[in-house]
Amino acid sequence: MREAIKSIIYVICKALVSPLAIPVRLLERWDRQENLFQFASQFMSIFPGIPGEYLRRAFYIWVLDCLTPGPTIGFGTIFAQRNTAIGKNVYIGPFCNIGSSAIGDDVLIGSNVSIASPRIHGIDSLDVPIRLQDGKVEKISIGNGSWIGNGAIILSDVGAECVIGAGTVVAKACEQNGIYVGNTARLVRFRSNSKQ
Image (cartoon, rainbow, N blue to C red; front, top):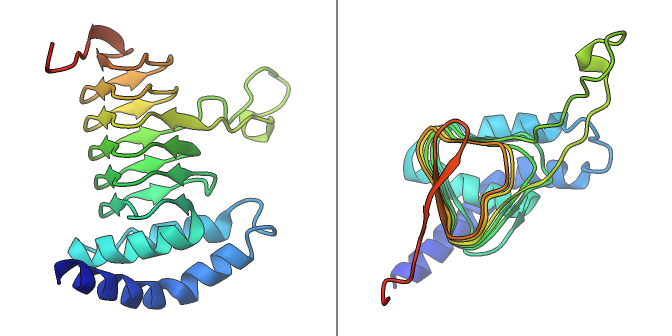
């Protein structure tokens, strides 16, 4: 019964967000600067509470590559690029800024986390302002079952089943099953099977 009610609420939310989601999806080819997508992401971030979570879930299933059941996305969280894939049973806390990324299944992301491509701006030429230099958007991968603590900054890939401590800055790829803390992230130990 509870699942049936959730399904009905999801269908209602999908209908409510469709006037915004459909143009974002249809105009994707012409929205090269992603202005429409970013506007929609910022707009969807301001709805509070559980109704906001349902609305965001419905919206992002329309416009991103999301598996169902869709993600739970907290208040104030925005997506900077639409080039993002989200796995099943993902939780993204409030006030996150998510760049181009592939987020695996069963990932937990705390509040105020930033996932950003580190080379989005070119910096090599002194003759050209940084804002005018070509950069490269690199997709950051967060492996299945990982947990990213509050306030972490993710600039490189995180392996499956990792724990990233609160406030950690990940500048280099993190190995699978590792627990990382600090600025910059350092390996504390590897997680092990509880039956060992």
